[in-house]
Image 1 (cartoon, rainbow, N blue to C red):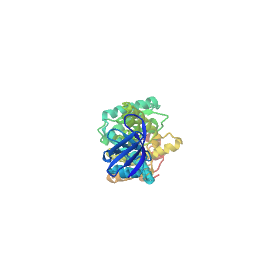
Image 2: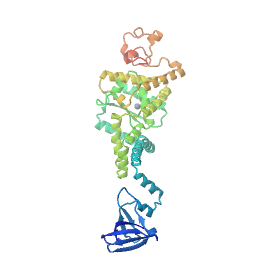
Image 3: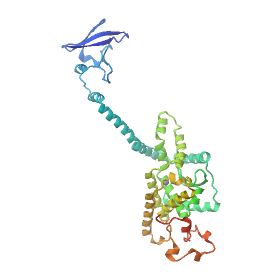
Image 4: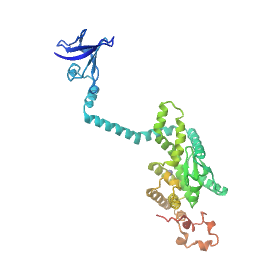
Length: 397
Ligand SMILES: [Zn+2]
């Protein structure tokens, strides 16, 4: 026979009775002491799970309870039937197991952040209807104009019309079935940048137009932005970064969660940047689109180089395109390689590549061709020679 001292509660009043609890060989538990004398088959009693060093409760069928300090002997009385509880109980007693479970929890959180949230965000983005995305884009443009200092473009009407015609050509070549719109804006605070808004609008700043010295580089930037739109990058990336807020709003029943996205998109587009994976995905789209327009993907490399040169020139942070679409040697190299592949397939385009020097290659030099009117011939697609002087960067640099 074995016994413990314990406290008895009759389940009716809150009075505590000091008792002794003993188990007889007959399979009965005997509670005795302070006005109490109870016998109950052990099989009818239930014990609370062990939790650290807290006292345990033995429950009687009629609601009476015995509160007893934990003791290994109790395991003899109440052999643990539930395997899970037994496992939990064992783990709780081992410092290593506790430490391991903390590490496991942190790792699980990390994995959720690294893979779970992007995956879930993409599934949500897939389900956002095109009409909602277009509305979201309108809201974002409104925000850009009202809160981020975007104003009417200062480009000349004829220049704008030229670029719009090029835009339409690139959109047609991209094979998209989305309606795309081009918006020019003057935005001092933003400098040279191009933004692919959700829903199909592409915003290009005057500074970006001015930083590119060849319209084929403009086509390349547009083709790249169309790639971002085709893959819904702005929406996906914004969902990823504001996922926790949106999720919290969802569970709180706050339908204004959508406004979080409307505010989040312009902030993201202007202050953050796409993941490397998204950039490379858009680059590949751009190369295919450029090829479909009959232009070399190498123009994308040229655009990047022109923007980098412009960035070095202003010596400030005015070429935002590079901070929101991080450039890298690998991406420029990939564009050059795609350009080389393009030339193999279209040898007739050998003159239409960045850095082509007709003077050197063919002896057609600008001062012989149009000595009196140099500035006008620059920028004309048909006349290459002065392009290099303007655009400065040489191929492969
Ligand atoms: Zn980009």
